[in-house]
Length: 453
Image: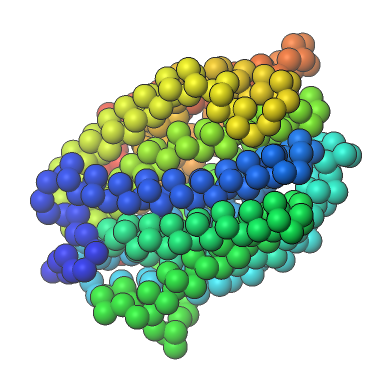
């Protein structure tokens, strides 16, 4: 029996498919926009008030952080699919058990990331060929960032619960508050107090803490089926297997892709701090292009999970088509705009001509191929919602990790140019898109075990 729509939760097994997807995706887009804004503002303020060395330290952080938290967020994807399928099936007890298991796993994972990140930051930065003039600031930034990683991990665990039941509005509200707080704290700590890169890291940690506290309090005070009761937080063993079935492949995929991107970043680092600053500035801008892709992907995972939980396979298939078209169209429109506007946009971060040139070069190599990036991520999201997370793991590890790293390692030996690194992305996006298209057309993602719980 379906639980029905209540409050901001959205049951995606009924009503207009396009309306349900868009209703869910728009708040997710806005949430991700604000999250990307406060990541970018760190770089903008540091670049303008501290300089290119500090900008390089902040801007090169993405690959390392993604590797560290990627596996954890993959586990949350598994937990979210379990929650969404139980919610779609109308199983109140299983929703409650899955929610409390998610929170318990979040606490364990957050503590692990904090300890490992603080302890291993110097060694990993050495492995990444971080230039000596950038290394001290990078170590300082990462150690402060990971000291507050528990808040970041727990916010994403709580946000995943809301999104699994179709409520993408509450995470938006808390991210807006967090983002505004981050801007104010960045300006205060970096521009006024002159704390440099440490100020930017502290501001980010405090912003994460604010968003977690707000979203967790909402979960504990909710009167809906997914309410969190502090005395019930524990790992329910019967749900560990279905969570890990989706979560481990997703987590391995994220972590290994993050590791591959660290190798890519280490190659970029060899071109010096201006290359690091320019490429890092571009990556901040690319994050904005990725927002509609992420939004449609989250909507697709939740939509697919709920409809498969309700055994509405035809509706799940139609929703997949809507979501893919929306993600691809948005990404390509933004890619064209990026291609045209990138010189002025990169200049927001730095006034140094060489830094701007590196960023523009990367943008104009990849931006017209964002449609391929969108297609691959949307297809992977659909398969995760269907409980088939091993397929996207294999595809992305093969192309986004093995092929990408092998290509860069071999070709840069003969053509030692940074453009070789840039071209690795559209080439591997294209290969994964072709593979995903073949699998989607086969319909195998809707076959066999339809529900995890």
